[in-house]
Image 1: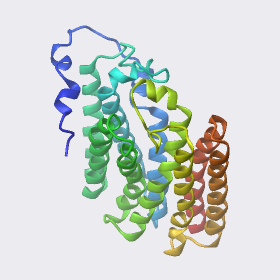
Image 2: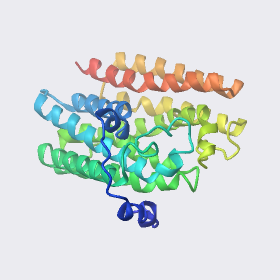
Image 3: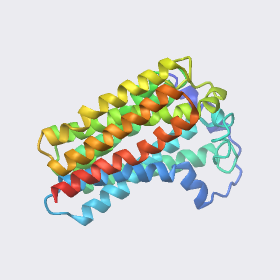
Image 4: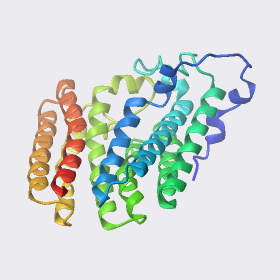
Length: 305
């Protein structure tokens, strides 16, 4: 299950690291766990927990939020441990705690392992075993499969979309204790959404990614017509996928209207990127993706209420 070169990824630096004291700030720990990203991920799980709940249990919701946050932060931490050398090469990541020398590798491993262990145990024991299993699967796929694959193939994005789509399924399953049809549908919506979301980011940051040897746009040619066409295609595919919750009776007409309008507007942003193929259009699609997912998830909840 682990990447075959995982033992080389951490290499002897962990064992040979000098025993020097590096004082870690709260700000560095937040950066190590990617606080904002972890918060967005947990919000997705929390929305779907609320969607699945008949009578809301605030105690269990808090367990989901805290446990999910810790596992997500741990996944982000392991990602930064593995990519610490390449992070030095990119402008947006060179000031992270590890490449900037404000955190040692041993300290980083200790923090990530602690967060992962506590988070998984909270979800497993505080909610149900399925929640613990799903969170563990997401951590392994993101940290030890997707992360190393980024250096090898553009298909890494497809692998990374799997753990990225587990949170809504986890949120729903944390209530039901099973992988129901609705949980799988919520997974599919977020799975497809991640492609225009991530590829828009990759378009904006492509020059920085290339400095580290990452080819994360759908075409190896980078910001070209082929990449723009694939982004447009998957964004259009999101329209029928996003309507599946209404088809299966998760919500009604209001959610149907909001989701349809949001999906069409989102697709029009992808059309604009295909036509112009510039960074400004990619930024518009990127910010549109940040709004799209919470809007349709909130619409499902409101319609249910």
